[in-house]
Image (cartoon, rainbow, N blue to C red; front, side, top):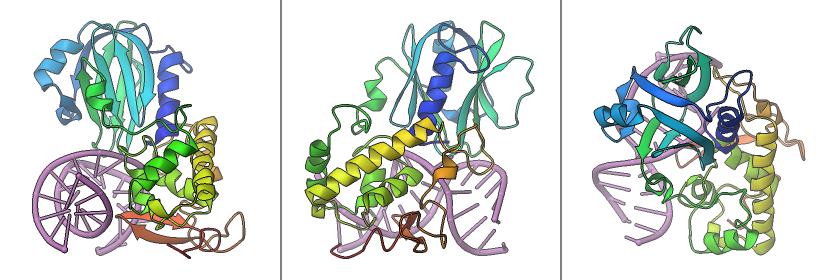
Length: 274
DNA sequence: TAAAATGTTGGGTA
DNA sequence: ATACCCAACATTTT
């Protein structure tokens, strides 16, 4: 479940606990690797050695990355398409897709479940090794509509793929990008440097409102991956092809842009003046 | 059955 | 250097 609100929801659960202990304050005894290619940095053997006996100081998020601060170094995890993290007691039966398991001192485990195996795990001294290339955090106070307009006008790209580019803005994925563009009334093929100030303001607000709504609903739970999130019931365009636009009633359409399915309302997001 | 799925990355073209 | 396309990664679902 990989976009900003889902990652934020998972990070919060790890940080404060849910119906069980939190990860914060726990010590990692060892790691069990059933799909060693999960480990991206450093080498698998070095990773095994360096993760032992590390104490978890805090858990946070940057873009779509989970950031686990240790007493020495940083454990950083990207869930990609199908990853999920949970804390489970040792005696809770494992799922066949629990590929990377961290054993904790309190007889619990941090389990990285990942059906499609696209996820990645990093252990680095300086988190900027991983976060350094990321664009701004959309919910941070330093992300303003003026800064967004400045960045948009530096480029000449179609707005949808640009918003998906994590070096441009960190955290948006396919669902929240489509939802944000609909809220802003902007066609996904519009050129970034063609957006007028009032459109940029609407986009800025659309992005932030969509993400905040996603977070307050604990993210979206779709397909076979379920986490208790509810945002899938609030989609206005995503996977609603042929259904009525919540604003004007027109049928939602789908097209492929930059190899990603893209959903929008042709009336509320007019193609005119692309 | 072929297509598509919440993501990224590397390679190639213009 | 910028913009864009395609394939790849691995698995499941429609």
